[in-house]
Length: 329
Ligand SMILES: O=C[C@H](O)COP(=O)(O)O
Image (cartoon, rainbow, N blue to C red; front, side, top):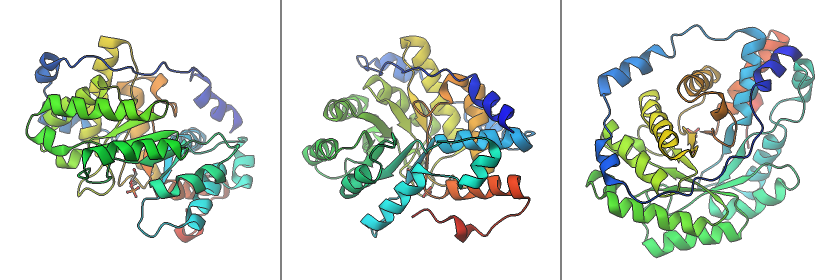
């Protein structure tokens, strides 16, 4: 197994990406963005049916997926204890005997993602691990609190120690075509983030059309997003493959035009290992290997890790354990 694991990771360069500084709003570019819904849906439908990687190669890609998970808890009944358990899982996402068998050590999840009040406990529980803390912000999930409070919330979360801020956009700016307002909003949020990296949540399930998703993606990148993210996990429809195709093609266009690589985070409803493999294949095909690193790709997911761990356990032992044995928090 060790050689396959190394092979799957070896081609990925270990480089630090310069941050996307954003650019002036280019409305002509935004208005030219279209989305051919039937072609996108056809391509998306063909993805899960493909022949998947098997055996040791599959295990290697599942380990890769783990390193890209923003391990998330966003519940009203979150407690310091639950967050501490989640952080322990982020530090050691897979049982040591399984990792030993696979010849891998020292992997962690990409980040832990929490509400503001849980930042300090998460920072403390992750001290020394190198795992960043992401905080959802700006009146998550609806983003309808007063604008000055949304900006202040970002500042509070950065002061509390969050390394990454997941902001939500005002969906109404997209639905009414008020692109200038969306650009101004996201630019202000980016300024408030300072050195913390900003993920912009589009809440694509509420944007009405794939064309709106394409346009909102471009606006967020022009306003300085480090990542564009599909969903809060609280919309009726969260991450999907068609939406992902539109967003990652916008990322590709933005890179071709500006030279800056923006990250991608599908979030909400991704809970199965096989879905994670489909997303990784999609990223590899559309954006290339460079985007298969945690600085440019994350899964926003609360339960995906449990299913991946079950699949790895099956790969090593030949048996499945019950999902309750893989609790996250
Ligand atoms: O950003 C992450 C999502 O809130 C997690 O959604 P999930 O619970 O459906 O995995």
